[in-house]
Length: 118
Image 1: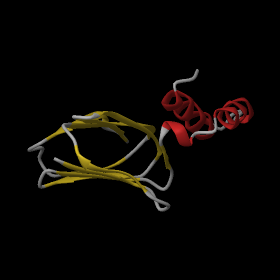
Image 2: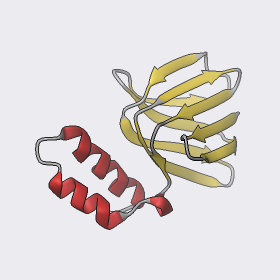
Image 3: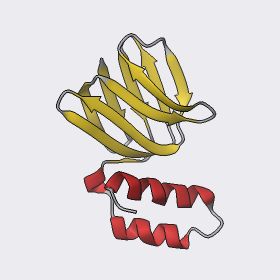
């Protein structure tokens, strides 16, 4: 199936994939395979995994939408980052400075998770 992971600044991934896994608001984690029924949902602050024949692409997304139709999955997010685009030190500081702001803490934790750091 065709997959696109898009933010306003760039296309982070565009190509064929076997599976896409993301977390939707109120729906939990959802996996999409070829032939999936049409689907539209809002995304949580979470990671998105794209499993392709060449390996796995993981990205941090900070909200957005996932749209599935006709063997095409489109993930749209205002902010989406691949592991090599994440400033780990900044994410650590953001987590420490989040205080009572659960969304800020979650964004920092997702960035650290995708970067492979805890």
